[in-house]
Image (cartoon, rainbow, N blue to C red; front, side, top):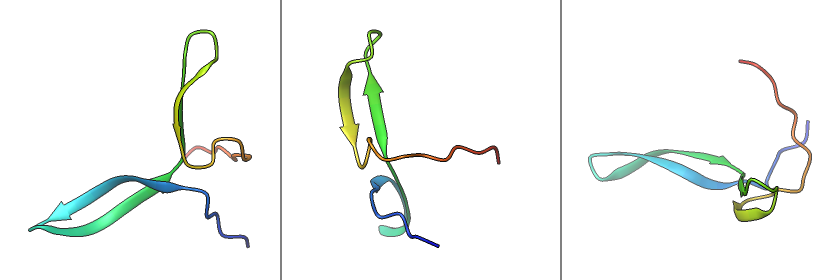
Length: 52
């Protein structure tokens, strides 16, 4: 299995002043016409969406 390394820290969980956990991923914000407004992480790589 390959490990995905293209994500960036998007959210951190802090407890008593210490980072307890981090959620990594990629995000892109598009305009109504499809132009990229903002992005972070690997936004051009393939994704494999699934229900959970």
